Image 1 (tube, helix red, strand yellow):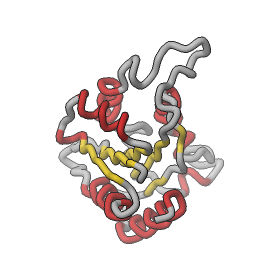
Image 2 (cartoon, helix red, strand yellow):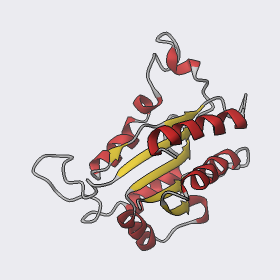
Image 3 (tube, helix red, strand yellow):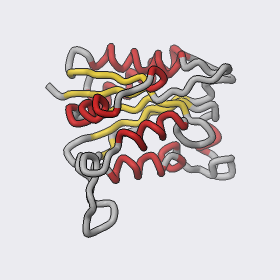
Length: 183
């Protein structure tokens, strides 16, 4: 049975308590629990570096559930990666830059929540100039690639503050999980 680590990278603010990200994480766990061994990390609760390293070593697939703040992952998730992605475990020096990743046998999926509406990405004349969510989050993807992990198709929810539609997000997530994991 494959092993999945789900990480909730939400960072709490007075105006953003993270209920949607936790709801999406819970839905993932519920959908995957019968076909995969699961572990989770909720970064807002803190972490032990050694324990988190062991979770990564254990996992075949890592799912990052995170909001997007200012076109990137929250500072808390970035701090987590800076503390947990240790040299010698996640990556080593290589003769070609970027090829020293030690987790070449692992995959990851990025699941994000955006306040930006979907249309802001689709329109070449729009704010994101036709770029995808993955294009905007290229630094996150390059970080995972640096460790050797391979990307699975990403998932995103849009307009989550101004026009939230939790049932539609959950339906889309279920479809995505079925497509990626056949659950």
